[in-house]
Length: 113
Length: 113
Image (cartoon, rainbow over all chains, first blue to last red; front, side, top):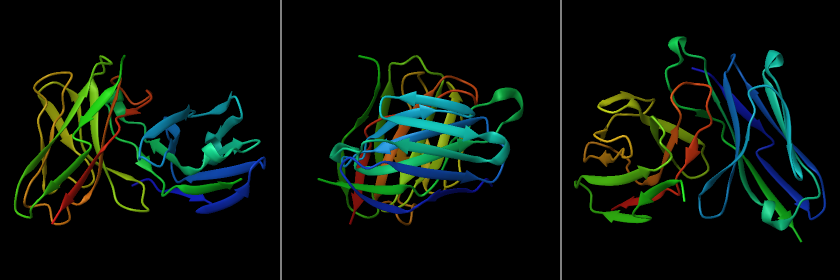
């Protein structure tokens, strides 16, 4: 099956710092999503980005599908950004049938005041 | 409010008992999914359903069963055959087809002793 690797596994930053999280995947995908898991376990959708670049406030993401990686940028970090960030992908399936996401192990981000 | 609800939030069971986790969505999505998360890990796919009365096994279906009698509902039963049932269970839904964003419910934490 497809492999999804996220780096770094852990990241500790001071409030106000910028960060870049990376997601590498081993095959062509037709769905790539970034999630933030908060301390209560809720998965919050950040970006749906199988290719290209998107921005939402202090967060932006870029996926280079031909090189099989995606980057999540967080600028001017706040303590509320703490949590685990997951990248998840889905392989193309002939006929467009629904299938599940394959998740990386996540990046655990801690923002210190 | 449109969304995905899961109940209960916490569930405790004795070993050897079957337990059913609820998942309901009012997003009018055709596809629904069940994932399992273990501490420090990403999510893994248990079962998914593209349409009413149809469902498919995911990567870790052994010891689990599902039903899809209504579009809005996709309950998961954790049977006594599941060897390590203690985990965080998340339900998700999306439009039918691979190129659509998945949205997640708040999850159920199951503890079996």
